[in-house]
Length: 72
Image (cartoon, rainbow, N blue to C red; front, side):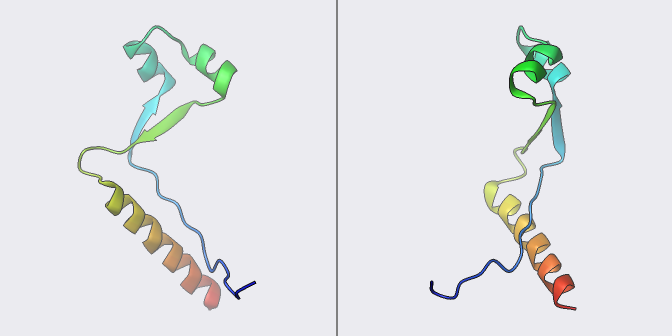
């Protein structure tokens, strides 16, 4: 072992939410069909103004806040 450790974890979900009902309006499916097969009810979709590096930075900031809060 090299002495590495996980100091904190964080996550970030884009603001836009796509529901199964939204999806059913786009393709031939239903909320019940999706939930019964994969268990998903909603998904968060990154918009064109949310590039991956900004999503990662938001997650990193959250992890840093949690790490500082635990250190107190």
